[in-house]
Image (cartoon, rainbow, N blue to C red; front, side, top):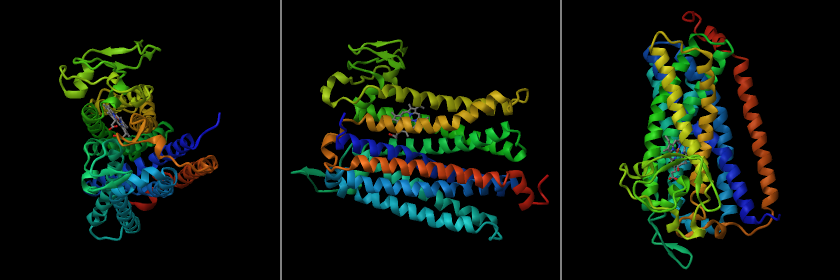
Length: 445
Ligand code: HEB
């Protein structure tokens, strides 16, 4: 099989995004967890929480560094691999792209000050205050870049004349109909995933018998945060589905294998599809697709048959959607169970099964991020700019994308390994309990 430049460009872009999103998600969520931990530490005058903030911040710097490299790769690839897209859309999305960079610098400056001023202020709250611009910076860069993705789904704020964008209104382009739900869902799931990753690392340490009070407090803090963010993510996901039903019905219909427009449409969970588009072996929740789409069983949900065949997204996104939603419910379940066991004194929240369940929740949440994005991107196919330009028209015609692909994959493998090795080294040589003794010799018990 000969791979043409469209396929190769898509492979390179999706690999880069799939790798970058891991670090971007951590980059958006972990500052929030650092801020919460330091807040608790100062408020309760508890060195355990302060140490948590310190150690999380230290690990965070490594993931930020990798995120910068992969983020730069995306910027490069956008104009190199998708020249026709950038020619049309480049001017429209220049503002949010610039704002994202600005937000990143804003975050980086305050992160630098934060890292170098531990114990420098008499009033500890001043140091904590520095976490606020860091959080604002990282969440704002997610916000700006998500408006660009939203724009690709529901473009507005320009007119197309002879293949050129005219009458450009960048603010209207940023505030397109997809923006509110996407930004809400992206932020809540990044916070959720970061809380669960930190919880998973902590639960693993406890299972390896390293757990003292430090780890117990860390797990309680991350689990309570995770439960709150999980509810937020579910609410945002529900609103996203309602957005799709109204503005991008083919994407929702593809996720739900929904062919005929109808009221009281069933929600299809998992199952298989045969050549005649008949669904088998599914779990069927009667009327629930209508409910998801419009909060009422009478809502009419538009089916795929209303769209010409070459404008329907691939149907395998159904599984990604179902897996993402299942992981969402799993995270509510696991965090809920831990908190219930902890508050309800007869139960032991440190039992092995539960701890392993928490260990699993971290990688699962990251998978849900990947599934969610693949669903959102593949579900937009065949469009790169829905209604205006197809992916196939946007790709570069240049040769050599294959070699570039191989080089970048090599770079990501190297970066991934380096990141893990550095993180393990960083924390292995300095276990939490030892660091506590050293930093707070009197208070540590
Ligand atoms: Fe999700 C996407 C829903 C969970 C992550 N989500 C998405 C979508 C929807 C949904 C509808 C599409 C949108 C558009 O495209 O616009 N989700 C949902 C639901 C749920 C969920 C209903 C249940 C609760 N997710 C989830 C989780 C996670 C996620 C859990 C993680 C962690 N998603 C996601 C992402 C995405 C999605 C990342 C991509 C972005 C957007 O928003 O789009």
